[in-house]
Image (cartoon, rainbow, N blue to C red; front, side, top):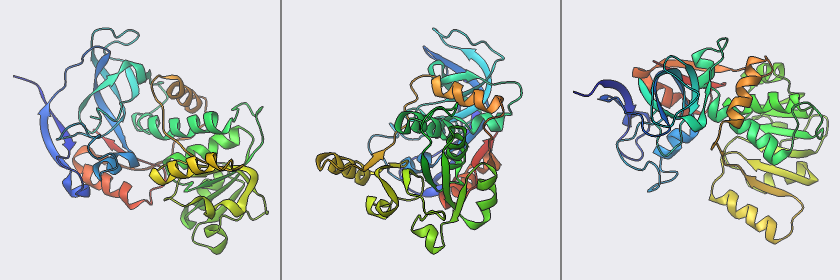
Length: 329
């Protein structure tokens, strides 16, 4: 008889938190390149519930019912064929691709290609907070902006909107490591936290200046890292430098169309969609090292037991979390 486990899953598009079911399902079996992991913590990401809401309808999930969750930390139980460098008992953190998910469960399959060992000084909750949020911040900073973490790169003026969310808090710290000047927007209650992580200027997004993204010191932005709900290019144009770029971190079809339009019209300013590429462990290892070295702080908004996955889902959908929301097993 198959060993069973507890998990949170949904069986149709839409429905929000109430559609998540706490169920008993069989423990998965590791295949080529996989490890079976006893999950200790799994974080909630915006993309999880956006997929449930039909973001990639008819593409993701590949089938129902679907156990969401891509960011896990835990202990290796067994390894499948072809896995080297890991053994039962190893503490790990891993990013599971969106095609599979499975993190909201007591056991999950972690691909060896996107798994790294967890340092002894890092908690399970901290580790589960890293994969999507920290990798998104670091990869977009390096690949689209060209920052250098040793401070040797360009000293840019950067605006980060929605800076108190999971990705925004990491982006703020990474921009400061790179020696950039950071203006950030967030809610009034989080302004001191964002400032404490290095932001040079912090705006309450509900004020007139915050709503217009106006730098208190009058600076124009070389880069806008947009983490808040969609805004058209025109909302940022008055505050951009001549060659300024807007990076839409939660892109929609409108983002892609505007990017094409700017290219066709040879616009000096750009509107870029960002999509995480996590096909190897490079960036996951980098953010893990930064946390271990004390250069990057993990801010956790709240933790919930797996049986309260609906509450964690609802907290993320509300859009007012400060840092990461994590399920603990």
